[in-house]
Length: 146
Image (tube, rainbow, N blue to C red; front, side):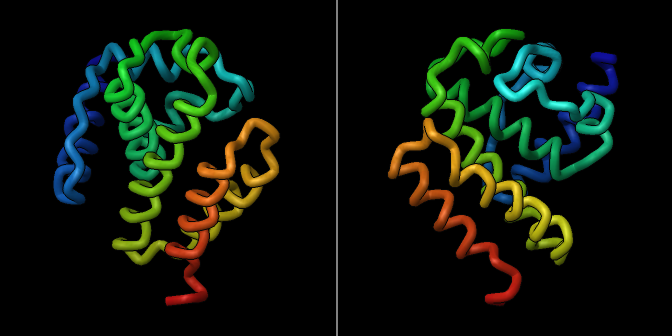
């Protein structure tokens, strides 16, 4: 499985570099992070993520952003880290994912992910700063506006 992760990571890192984003994520970190525990008990599988460029971009950026904030990446990173840091990394990941989907002209994916983003606005742990960033992403990537 790590060999597949390694190949996919190399491909996604090239896409991110073309978007002006450099990610330093190892196959081991990626695997541990995605097979670890979450707050939401996500139902999406590692295979589904590996098979989807958008989700791969999201996860690679999210992991990289957490690393940049000094967090160690392992199976407990999500549940043992401050939620504010997780949300900030998640928003950066969504921004990169939406940028890529927009560049490809994939309005269906953009609309789907913006609906997910709208649902986060009701999170009780969300600071006003993060809520404002979410609203900014909703406005920037709204396909009806452009």
